[in-house]
Length: 145
Image (tube, rainbow, N blue to C red; front, side, top):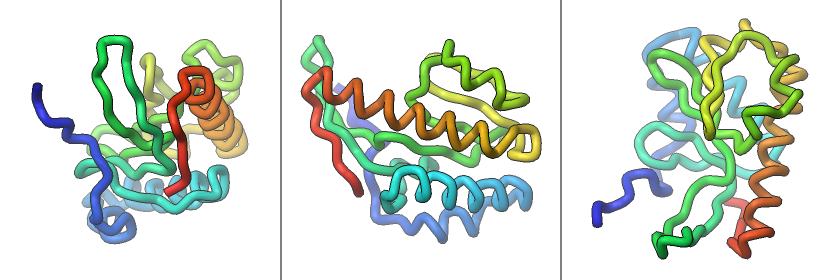
């Protein structure tokens, strides 16, 4: 089995964000860092080379595969901001968010200027609540970082 690449690292979150090449993406990442810290109350930690994560949970799938992942997080990718939110893609809160795309596990935003920040805060809160609920249902331990 291949080694999991997305795991907690000792890389400095502030250094990572300071080195984001695109000025707008870097400023958006700094704003997201503050927002996620406010919502979670947890300290940020790098997961893999590009994910800024908050909290963590240990999971075990029905297949027996186990691992650990951040409870919620974001990544300032070159093409867009990716939010690992845990929010249900059908959640009505997303309608108020503004310009975004969504997949099963991620929300994609071009830049924060495209979204309503109050709505984004609600989406992040809902995602964290959903992740905590899933962990409780599955019996997976979740912890602050």
